[in-house]
Length: 139
Image (cartoon, rainbow, N blue to C red; front, side):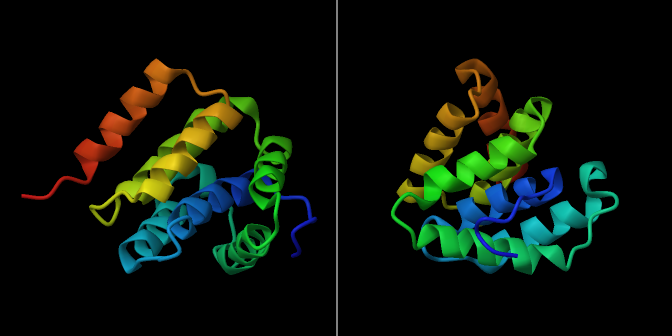
């Protein structure tokens, strides 16, 4: 799979999760576990081949090396993902960002860009973010 290949809707969701994880140039184990767990347990990934995660990750990494790679990534995601799953994509991204207990500035910037690119209502985004924060708190 190359950076110009069309993504499936499930690939697009994986790409969003990988992009958030890679945005701080430090893909942490907790983030990888969260991505794998999400793919293995959520109904939207019911018939998804988990071996695709590596291929989709390669596409994201390749795009991140290009000058307009982030714009290209969002274009691929919008082409592949039904609009009704935009908030799902944002929720998955927030979960990955929160998975390691530390949200880097680069992750926050990518989430902000994602809200804009996927036209996520600010109030809905705040609720999604609060849910992710609540799910990933530690004692």
